[in-house]
Structure formats: structure tokens, C-alpha cells
Image (tube, rainbow, N blue to C red):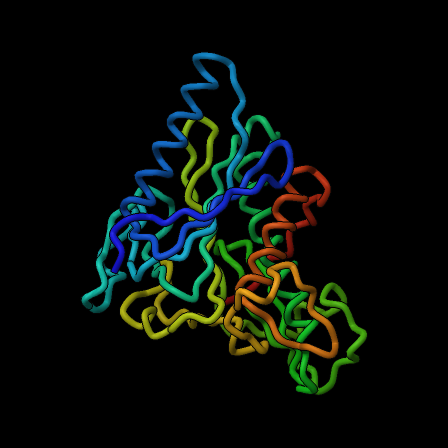
Length: 288
């Protein structure tokens, strides 16, 4: 198992944000690099008044459990061979590994005019947008409609099933009544750290990972929380070198790759960062 980070190309998204992809990443070197970069940016801004480009790190982690700054050991239910690492992000315990998309947001919040709450809402809504688009694009004839939504009482993004017997296929996600839905589980987790107005750490979305790793913990500190993955709700294929990562989903090819999802999410985040996608009003509180 590699013990170093392997960085891929870092194409610019716009004048204020760049991306960096890291595969087979061990957690500690990645965290060290992320913190080092954040501290360097803070110093450049404070000492020289320089604004550096914000960065979005796309990471494929080797298996690891991470425990947040205020994390409680009691949420680790079973010790396995997977390392457990204490880290400085918010939140409780979670798992990272292959088949899960991790994105670290190295943003200068003051420079883009975001509060911490703004950033969390943008993260949740970006995930909602892309997951719902993928669900819609690969919809089956099932009578149960699945949609992704955030909750006010618990950070992250969750999948909800509509309890109506039938739903018009033309009905949009926004038109579905909250009262007609039931939460079936969590598909994405959030955990950030803010230092002198700069963010790092970020989001993790379960795409086609092995969910059994979550059985050894109370995910994010919630006993009995059902963790879900997108591959159980849409047709997902492994990405190939011959398939461009920005290939749109079409009616005649209702499949999705890890790379396609990643690119759609990057595009959505970049537009939000540029002020092109405004925040939606927060949904009312929902029961677990």
C-alpha cells in the first residue's frame, strides 16, 4: 500500500480556484500537506497581503477511520486492522476509503464573502444538486422516488424516499412534499476546520465503496445511522481511460462513472465559488 501521495494534474477552474487530485492517499501525509498549504496561505495574506488561489483537493484515500477534534472513543464500536487517526476537523468518527469521493475545500472564506454557515450550505447543496441530477438521469420505473436532501439538525446529505404510491415522472424534487418522505440513510458527510478565516478538510460522498466499514463505528456519532452509497440507486461503472470525465448522462446510456460524478460536482462547486449559483433557502427541520 503506497505510503506517499500521488498527485495528478492541477487544471485551473477559474481565476480564483484550482483543483488537485491525489490517489491512493494515506491520511496523515495528506493532512500534513493540507495544513502546511493552509498555513502558508495564511502567512502570505497576513505578511504580504497576497491572496492565493483557493484549492479543491479530490482525494482517493486508503482505508482509514478518522476521529474529529471533539470525537468520542465510544463511537468506535469495534477495533479492526484499519488505522484510527485523531484529526483536527469538526465532527465525530467516520471512514474514508476507495470508492468514496473525498473533496477538501482549501478556501479563503473572507475573500469570497462566505461565512462558515454559507460554506456548509454550499457544500450540502452542491451534493444535493449532483446526486439528484444523477438519480433523475438514471431513474428506473420504481414507484418510490428517491431524492437527496440536507438536514438542519445534522450536517451531511441524506436520501429520502417518497411514500406516495405513484409519482409523476415530471415532478421535480422541489415539488415533493417533505411530509410524504421518509429518510432511508446518509450518503455524504461533512467535516471542516477553520483557521484564521481559511477552511480545510471537507466532504465525503459514498459512490461505490464497501459500506461494511461503517459497521465498526457509529457514523458521525449517530448510533444506528444507515449509510448509503450511490451505486445502489443508479447504474455505476468503473471509469476508463477511454471515457472522458465530462461526458454527460444521456437517455441511451444511463450509466455513471466515478469520474463523471466528480467532474459534475467540481463544476457545481466552482460555479458557487464564482457566485454563479446562489444558496437556496434552508429546508425546515426534519426528523431522523
